[in-house]
Amino acid sequence: MSKRRTKSEAEAKLVPFDAARYLTDDVAVAEYMTVVLETGDPELLLLALNDIARARGMASVAKEAGLGRESLYKALAPGAKPRFDTVLKVARALGVRLEAHPI
Image (cartoon, rainbow, N blue to C red; front, side, top):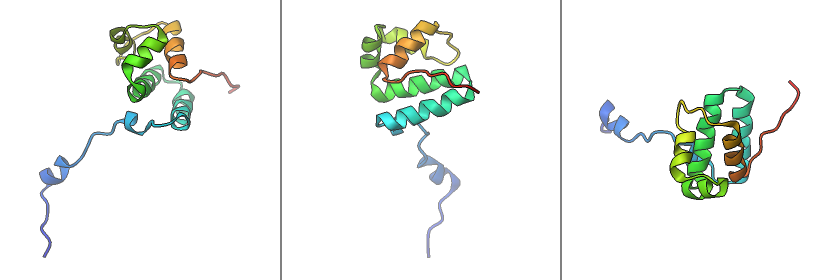
């Protein structure tokens, strides 16, 4: 006879999804960014850049982008409105580029 788990026991084993855990190589990062850019959603773009930066290490990304670590966190925070040059610096530091394609 199997023991039935209560709902709270089952929920206790759930781990919140974190995209950064799956962005382990350049191909995964490029595919993720491509899908995000296709949405045209600037908030989603910042979230994706944040995910990738966390996967790569915020301190090293900040250094590569020429930003302070705290500035990088603020620039990629939900609701932030970073300057476009900041977004480009971060993207370059992450090893991705934003491309334009005809729609």
